[in-house]
Length: 245
Length: 110
Image 1 (cartoon, each protein chain N blue to C red):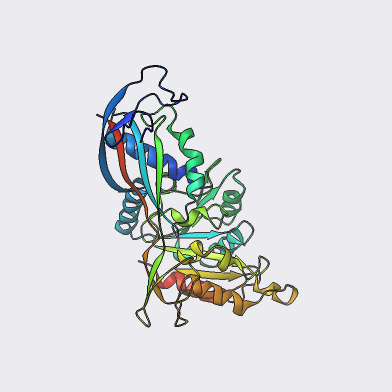
Image 2: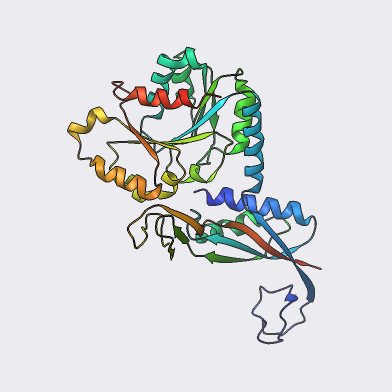
């Protein structure tokens, strides 16, 4: 409320950036309040639903892979494509702020890949995935693996229309990741603990990591593997196969 | 920082809904467990609103506190963060509140 003239409720001061000493006239104009009760991400969520429907109609499994930079997403994709690419007809949507380096690595394995550069953006959104799918044009009964921008914060909020979300952490990052980024772990359908071949050389408490992950997301499935040596990788392949449409 | 994208989404949706009307106040509801930092939204708001019908509008943010129900013992409790356990020790809880991310209302010139 304006302390000087008492205007309030449905009336506000149009010109309010002066000292408000009433040394000159200012205009009081009527306002009305409109209730919207609308989700902030309604537009993204609607586009995500369109993606989900399109993917289902084409019997395509889309999996959103999220992690911090350097957790081994691209290495995991390379191995998965080499060993399973032909069977599952894998194609890849790569999200990075800049460069086409990751898409080049994927294409070198023989799988189709499209790179999305988000520029200043820190996450993929549903519109970007829609554009990526149009370019990629994946065949029916295939798998699209989406490598999100390396970031354990922002991607958690944006539904892409994927069927499943996988969060990858590596043992070189520290066991406290789920406690520091519970939002991301809460969003996960599967957690992969990568680089377990390095466990003898790093101070990483697996039990503490599992406890943190389950506090953020009770009952979440956690698989331990090494994308480099292949140890434990069969569990990941089994998980993917079980979700094929 | 995803708050820039979040704020853009807010401004775009209000512009779409309200047409040419000059928007003077925006009220958002942001839950404390939503993963969105209200101060960062405030920081972005004036920048994003510039040149739109929301330019110069005030921004009001209602914070909704986290609340959960334990699936094991049935107790309802305030959830300060996503790692908190129920007093019974269970992590198996259902979120009742705290994840809101909504445009509640706007005030426009009549």
